[in-house]
Amino acid sequence: MAKKDRCAALYEISMVDFLLTDMMLYLDTHPNDKNALDYYHHYAKILKELREDFAVNYGPLFAEQSNCGKTWEWSCEPNAWEGVC
Amino acid sequence: MFQYEKRLQFPVKICKPDAKSAQIIISQFGGPDGELAASMRYFSQKFATPYREVAGLLNDIATEELNHLEMVGAIVYQLTKDLSMDEIKAAGFDKYYVDHTVGLWPQAAGGIPFNACEFQSKGDIITDLHEDMAAEQKARTTYDNILRLLDNPDVIAPIRFLRQREIVHFQRFGEALRMTQDKLDAKNFYAFNPGFDCKPNTCK
Image 1 (cartoon, rainbow over the protein chains, first blue to last red):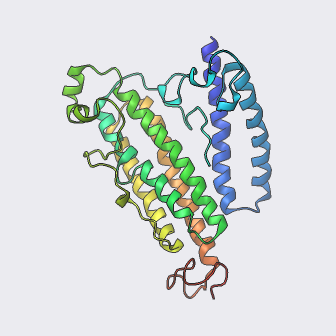
Image 2: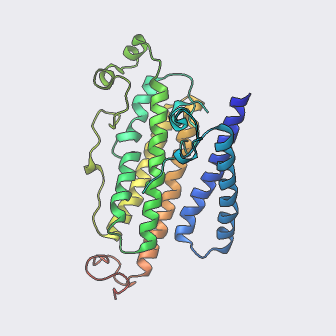
Image 3: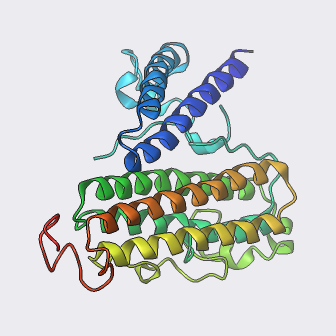
């Protein structure tokens, strides 16, 4: 069950990050769109929290999120292309 | 600089190996209209781009294309792992296998290796943006062709996502061309290189 939760958490991050990527490209060519700016900043805050929660619960998405310990957590977690969550 | 995040932009989870599909899809890894060419094209062009906001867009899209390269690599990898020798032979995958086993190597579906001649970095933002818009359409056509050859929903979902991004990038490059033209003389869009023949924002 823990594995399924990890998948769902990763999927949520991917959804919000994709939304921000798409909005970033829009803002690159529409830098003064107030609604788009508000939308971007609202979800950027949510993404930051989701990433922090994920690292605490399931392991690092970024190398510097690796926990202190005897082994190097960054290289123990599955790689993105393996098809496992 | 770049920082790696350990996840794909869109999930790729394929349970059933299919070497025939992998041999087609690898064209978007290292083929003429593939993601490697796309990323390197925009990444190379950004440096001499005279307008900061346009250069920024090139950088952001180059970065997204690297995510797409990783997704295409994941698709090909998952389609070719755990193949039996009989499956490799039956799918005609033996010619790739003999040189690369099931390692990823950037090539077109027809076996032609990746080559920087597949893209340009012309040092003229008007020329480059026209190339970029054409590149997005060529990649979209390639994904359309791939989709007509696929039947596995696990493969179709990420390929459809990638196809959709070509359309969005085309739109954004069109806007970047408009932003560039807005800085030029409306009667003289194509007659000179705004980044070389005159300093940015001074062209009359």
